[in-house]
Amino acid sequence: MPIWAWWLSLLGALLLLLPKGVPMRPLGWPLLLLCVFPPLESVPEGQVEVLQLDVGQGLAILLRTRNHTLLYDAGPRFGEFDIGQRVVVPAMRKAGVRHLDLMLISHSDADHAGGAAAVHQAFPVSRVLGGELARLAPQLDARLCESGARWEWDGVVFSTWRWEQGPDGNPASCILSVDARGERLLLAGDIDVSAERAAIDSGFDLRAHWLQSPHHGSRTSSSKAFLRAVAPVGVLISRGRNNAFGHPHPLVMARYRGLGIASYDSAELGAVRLQLGTFGAPQAERAQRRFWRD
Image: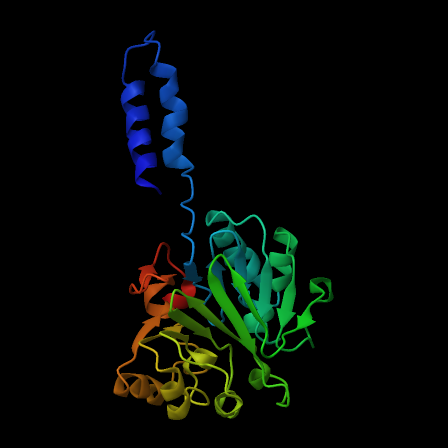
């Protein structure tokens, strides 16, 4: 909430304390509403507001530039339990999202793509891309992520890579690189060691300050070669506490520590916010309890 809105809300409260009949007193109500429905601060040119949502054993990352919004993965859906509907859509509305310029689904696994239909139903979406199209909801009308695609929004450069000769499933994940004033974020979906090697060999610029931990920290990902190619200062881990897969694997966590890479774990911190382009540290937003963190 902008500081000016706090001051106006305070002024509104003071006006409402005035005796009835004072001409300015009725203005207190609309001013006080600024505290209930605060205006959103716009994202500065050349920066990205990054929010890794707290979706348990899955992934959903919201990226907002000054005039554009992108969702990378949409959280899990297992049967009737749809995190897209229960968590992702409300979080996007709270962030002031009215329209998605791009929904990028890294690959078709339910913990990444399950919530996509709910998001697509809740918001107008200009374009949907996927690392693989099999099993994606037909109403998404998704197109295949193209390796080497590059575009710029509001002074921020985006580029994608996908292992076009690789197998389906986790290795097919579409990688997204985001560069904001020289500070970079790499979103890697569920790529495994073989896809990591293919990305290195392709010549795609993997360097990034911040890395979304591939495959939630699985031992089949985050090879030393890949981590050295990316050279991040920190990794964002999205997972559920005590998940059945043992993510993140102790060997991977030891590898991160050995390379001096800080970790930001959703199971411990809840949602994690990063203002890309300011070179500041990620901030935890543990606003409410989740059963997957207990």
